[in-house]
Image 1: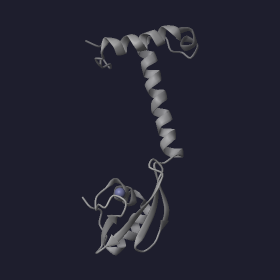
Image 2: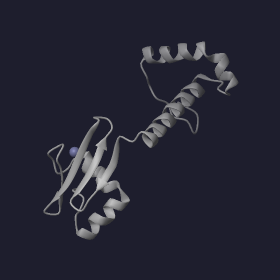
Image 3: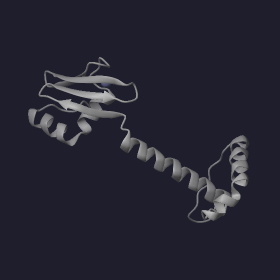
Image 4: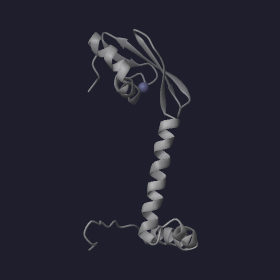
Length: 128
Ligand SMILES: [Zn+2]
């Protein structure tokens, strides 16, 4: 049982050994960074990855708004490297790319505060 304030996870021996080897190899460097234990190392690594992911999504958003008109929102999907158009038909959003009324592009459109405000005043609701 882990001590108070700690939780344990179980990983396969292969995974454990792989990370443990890395830890041993970098032990001197890590000690200089204030990482003094294997679990400290794992925490440090996960934190690092998480931070990089956050930075990635901040600086390289997967989706970007290109333009927003009355009846059409143009997005750029940076993963697929495609232009996505979301149009409004009968007060319902429709994604021309996915051919769908409920995809993550539409979710993204409704997550944009300025767009949401306009849609809301027009009575266009997010599909739920
Ligand atoms: Zn879509």
